[in-house]
Length: 157
Image (cartoon, rainbow, N blue to C red):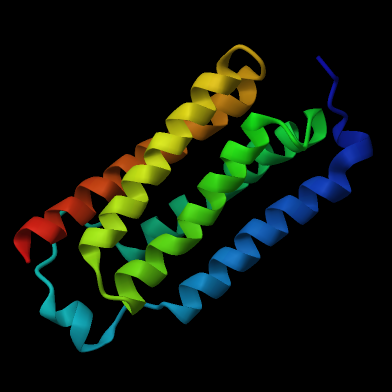
């Protein structure tokens, strides 16, 4: 197992973190919820306030970036890295599908696929890089919560 040196590799970690947060912000701004579409939906009561969602999203993005960075440094062409990238791409698709395409059902499919890929990542990393696997667990819990809220929206509408 290759040792990871934060002292040597911090620029790449900054790139991973900045890229993930930056692209996430762009996707969020381009697909910002609002308008009559959102007002027309019945929403479950368990939706957290915006400030809590934003703070949680930021912390989870940092953990996600750390896991990706660690796997990239170990082997950028590994299955674990490809699973990480797949999760990243799927996470960027959720908002456009829900808010732009206006398909909560398709968004539910995207988020369930994302959760499945995240579970595969955790299982693959558990014996190889437990830190990366553990960094994914809070994000998987949040994705599970978001999937439950999306499923509730689908069933209520």
